[in-house]
Length: 115
Image 1 (spheres, rainbow, N blue to C red):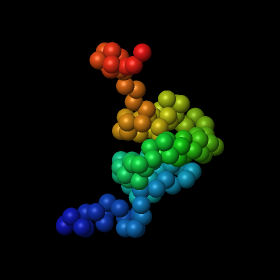
Image 2 (image 1 turned 45 degrees about the vertical axis):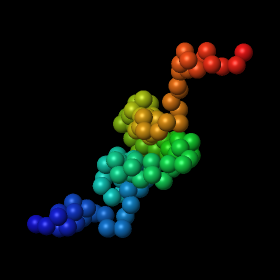
Image 3 (image 1 turned 60 degrees about the vertical axis):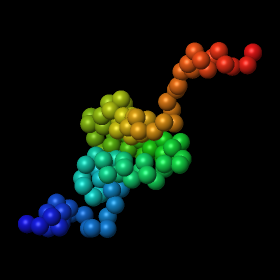
Image 4 (image 1 turned 180 degrees about the vertical axis):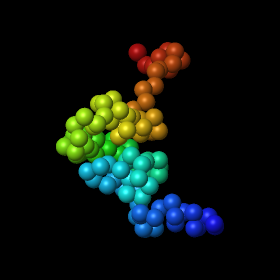
């Protein structure tokens, strides 16, 4: 089996043009079936929002809100913990962007500051 055939058989349920987008109300990836955002979706989102990381957080926060509503409506007992849902939607970009990293001033920069 060639690499092309393996890819086709692995994605039998999703046409080749389907992007890694959420399938609501299950919040699974339309392409690979993993919980959304899957790894490929995360990479695409980081690239798309590279210049505006705050917009990425706003978009993902709205997705988190919708996912909690959808998943709770489907089955309240398996929605997941708040911490797990937060990490799934908002925790990972904080680890991959420098938007919310707090830098502590060094002693040299404090001493150089004008009085």
